[in-house]
Length: 581
Image 1 (cartoon, rainbow, N blue to C red):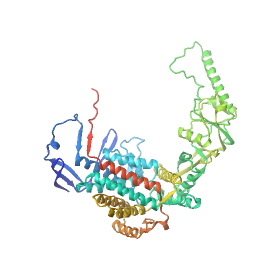
Image 2 (image 1 turned 45 degrees about the vertical axis):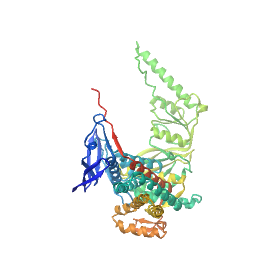
Image 3 (image 1 turned 90 degrees about the vertical axis):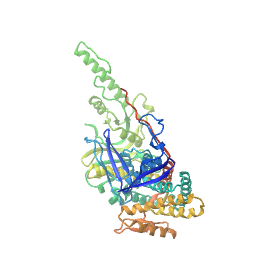
Image 4 (image 1 turned 30 degrees about the horizontal axis):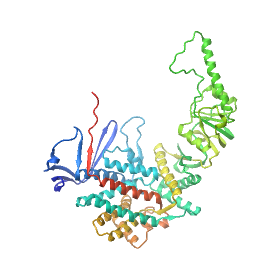
């Protein structure tokens, strides 16, 4: 369905085609999938103004410029389309999306997820305004771990309401002033409603468990959220407030079910102990290295060696062996009983290490070596000339254990006692990948909450409370900015509305009940979806909590991104680079 509508703009009279239905176009470029979404807005067809019909061309062939309302329309549509794409994944009843890569090779596996940051990272965006929302989602993921979908949806709703004001001939700078005033009121209300139990370890642990359950309730792990919330909280509290989330390792092992996942105190390395070495060693002094241990073969780069007899070849091989023997003697001089190398250890040095009574572990992956050195308190060395300057790692016990069908090496009693490993079990790699993403969000938001101990109620309660405060503040504003503040408040109320829509409930009815409850000062009232019917409930009784830092970051990032896009009045496109010849 479409309708032809005329109008007046800064560039003269124009006609537009108004679409009634959304359209999604996809094309493949260079093996990558590009998606364009056209929403039910207006597309410029024809204009009476010569500047839009042609006029003097100042750009190089292939370049172009979109000005005024048309440029602003493009920016709004691109950003709002991104919000509409991910808003169905919001909340505990959000839907999943399958991300199908363009290639069909063996490595092009589809991803099933409802994590906003993962979805937006995987979609190739052609619209510059849409990229702004993708960037704030990435930033939210890095800073807080959770809230990646909420921040994009909130920014898109702010822009949707701003679009209506622009079409009503309100200047963008007036809208921005109103949004800033509304943001200040919302921030003040959020800070006033925040609670802090950081000084009471028992209450604070309960707060962390509630936050973890709330975060996991919208993920794949929601059916086992109590189990995984306990794992995540125990792992984060082991850090003791130290700013290093790398000490928590997540290990994925297919097999069994999700509820069989467990927390292992210590570090697990996905390698095997060398053949002939002891499989159990106590009171370990560990030397972690990154050096070549394969010089029992002749390797002279960029040169050819010509010899006149096999005896000369034997002499060269003997010289190489002597070099390796000297290196092993230097390693033994460190007084270590475990040697872990990032690179391969060939047969001859392995034999020498065995004779020296040193356990050898070869080819540990790079991330594993870095993390292992950190949790053992060891240096990663590449030369062995100065044993007195090298710090050895220590742990109480190293043993080879079985997890599922695989053998791994477990390090117990590491010198940095904060180290631990969460072993994830699951029926398939897709389930394990999504479980890891869900657990990462929970660990990150808990880690941030330990740094900033304030918490707020969830279930859309804070958004409705902030919207209520904005509605009260706009009565004190006499100018046009009050209309922009009202639009800001409406955008905040859309979060609980979308939560209800995704759960298949009557969103308008529940929004009215929420608004009435918050007008009475019941600011802990929000939406719950745990019971069969769902509806309005007291978040305090249900224990639905969120991190204050995450909520504040969502609010400020969304407002800043919306302001940046509202300012746009000109889009300049460069000509594509031409290939030589």
